[in-house]
Amino acid sequence: MVAKPLAVWRDSRILSWGFYDWANSAFATTVMAGFFPLFFKQYWAADLSANESTFMLGSLNAVASLVVVILAPLLGAIADKGSSRKRFLLYFAGMGVVMTGSLSLVAAGSWGLALALYVFAVIGFSSGNIFYDALLVEVADEPCVDQVSAFGFALGYLGGGLLFSVNVLMTLNPDWFGLPDAASAIKTSFLMVAIWWALFSIPVLLFVHEPDKQTSSSLRENVRAGVGQLRNTLSRLKQLRQAWIFLLAYWLYIDGVDTIVRMAVDYGLALGFDANGLILALLITQFVGFPAAIAFGRLAQQWGARNSLYLCIGVYLVIILWAYQMNEVWEFYLLATAIGLVQGGIQALSRSYYIRLIPKDKPAEFFGFYNMLGKFAAVFGPLLMGGVSLATGSPRLSILSVALLFIAGALLLKCVDEEAGKMDALRFEG
Figure (cartoon, rainbow, N blue to C red):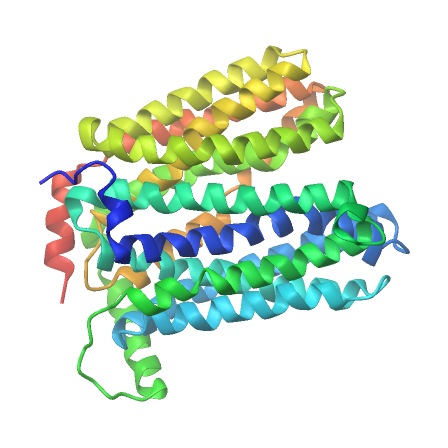
């Protein structure tokens, strides 16, 4: 049965679940993509050389990612065994909120404290997403899972974009908000993100329910059971061949997506575009992503998730070819619009397609693997771009090289047998 148009707006569980994306996307936009890297260099680590501050920030980002990579499958297994996905979501969201809010109190020059708080905030953000993704099983049946997944990403784009717009305006015009300078505006922005994240996390905790496994096990017993479940899963992974083919395809093309997101500003600067214009392009992507993600959820119901993913990959290839030859800043804005049209779609449909290929009784554990690969994304792509640029001296050829990731991902995606994957997942349950 196909979900009715816009039914997601009238279901309190789906709306409550989606608002967590609205909540934590403020951290991804304002803190991770927006202000923290810039403020770290110019305020907290102003006494360090540019090379030293870059090394510190890059190293600690890698540490945060490594922690999530190591813990994600184990945390998921423990949460599944104890029927405690919401509890783990609360723990990690709370960690992210407290650490983000604390950044507003860090004095100039205290780069060590700023980095420590940021790392724990990133761990909270990334780990919380494991359990948020896993709760999709509780709010969406298969006929509407694409639409619901897309709805979550759409709210994330809108919520993150709205708060980031206000924060950028505060930074450019601090006197409008009764703030003495841009530094105070950025510190206030960190506090606003924490409040926003906490406030809009409340609905998912109150109105999204997971089945009670009728156990009164202690945390220690759940940890022991979770470790046992993870060992059992690892010993049987070969039974889920289709899921693992998909995960490899996902790793390749999402590496391309994340590379474009992370390297777009650097590429624009290399072509001589103004930094303020590039920030505007980021905002364009956020707001275009809201309706586009919803549209892709509907499109997947007509075309199927995999065909819709092919469309997204095709658009990205066109974007790369256009970026290779562009010369004017208006072209950058147009490409930002095109990215906004497909970025939410490829993220949302990847999540909903994957959920069809995994055991329904172990969603958090398998989304642990999913998020683990997500943390490895944007590793090979930037290295590929940097290597090609260094070897050829051409930033244009470097962006063109990213097309290889999308092509390889599409070819592997074609090898996935969805019906066989569903049968494998059914046999794996229990």
